[in-house]
Length: 80
Image 1 (tube, one colour):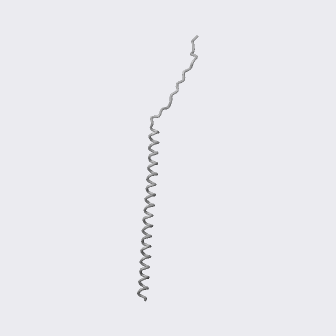
Image 2 (tube, rainbow, N blue to C red):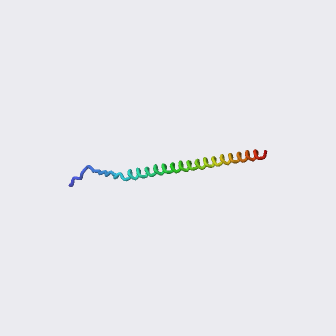
């Protein structure tokens, strides 16, 4: 009769990563942050441009109003 062993041996092999997934995740996060930053800078830049155009239009409007007032005053003086 042959003796058979009464115990079993279980080998558990764990899966170990090389860290590539962490590097990819950091790269993606960096790209997202850079994209958000660039978008916010573009939005700020557009707002500044819009404000500059609005201020210029207001200046032109004020100048036109003053010119109109001066023309009216000159017409009144020459009419008397």
